[in-house]
Length: 150
Image (cartoon, rainbow, N blue to C red; front, side):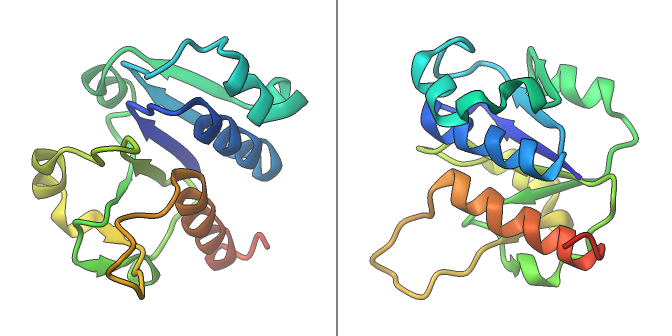
């Protein structure tokens, strides 16, 4: 399974996701613009010494990413989606797409992909959203569980 971070903004979150990707052998795709430099010290600190074990691909834009992965089965995750991530049937080559921390995925992208958009339900209305790295962990491990990998 592939993890895609659309325009991530916070270096420690991306570093934590990179560490998760190293642990699960999941390729990590970063869609520019990024809210940090790829050599940012906070990014490296959060990923610790696992960066050499991350299959990292940086794409200059969403259009560049989709042109390179035309046949990809994309799954979108947002608090604005209607279906729970537990209703998704994951495949080995799925691309799990997560939006930036402060604004999430664009509405237009979610509308165009409504049938492949999912949310992680939250029990408290006082919480606006989950941490990006936590959200990726929840979804990625559910996908791996469904595939019999964990």
